[in-house]
Length: 450
Image (cartoon, rainbow, N blue to C red):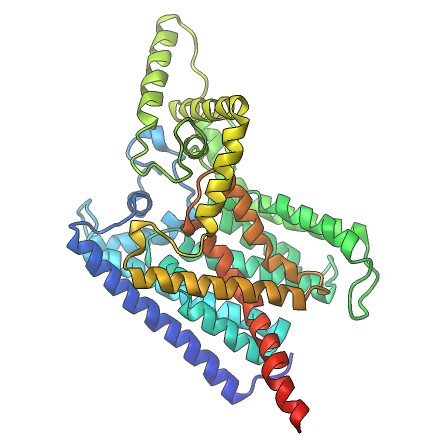
């Protein structure tokens, strides 16, 4: 990679600074709007993260409310938030200052993500494409929202992007798996951290394996004169990725096993999330009050009471048994209603990828229009960029999150929120696509007239 020119360096700094300012302005506006409604959080998830972060900050047991919620959320985001909870003093209730500090931290993480997008795009498509990609990520309303909400996406987006970018770098350069700074190891580490922030990323290694299988068929040789493609080499690279991923997840797995006596890969909210998306009367969206959980609580408590009276030992913890009950109920309903499963899957796909969001939390109509227009621009130009780089072995990895989260949320619930990390990653290819398109339509004509 050539040395950056001063003009390019200043442009990058300007875009990153502008992205930070946009996010800070949005954070203060959002905080003011939430306070007008008499609360500090707009989302229930935000409150749960803050409660767990407070527990971590005070050295208390990692549980949400009671000992029956010890594996309620993945741990990374609460750990990151924990130092910020010290700003709220000795009171249990969060303060405006502490919440604003958390939002400002999210803004900084968002600006870092924009810088990562610029750096990654420059390697693949050059400086002009990098600046275009950075501009898209800077202004995209969905990315700004993920920075200012107290949600795990604020750190997840950066971790996922860095994991993919490092992996693509290693594949394109044909980096040996014996390299001391193996990109496959570092990519696995970052993917593990991303999963500890956002559990829905847990099956990314499976998606990556499927991508590699397609790559084996598509690329008989590395493009541009690289060494001959070897299946063994690619399998070894994926194995290094998987090993690093598992080592990062291992402390969480050990902790969960000590709590439940069972293997719990992510959290014990999988059953509730699965039932939320698959049950009689499901709409494809989330029931934010989670009212359907109450009957399951009562049924599980009654069953446990009968087992104790009969002297039957209970399996694992109440939290684990409740999760299994909801998971089994969802699976049983799916087996009995396959046509409804397909119908709901299509509805959830539409809810996730529709251009213009309708959720009340998004805000004004202008924000919805801006979100939809920017989303379509990034999506179309990103697909074009992927086509332009179709002969690069790793570049379609920037499209893979779009497919991955699409499939995941056809199973669970659909929401515009869940597409945002994938669209942000797609900005890398969108910058290249817009640049190549402008070259062919605009610059190409100018050169032809000379």
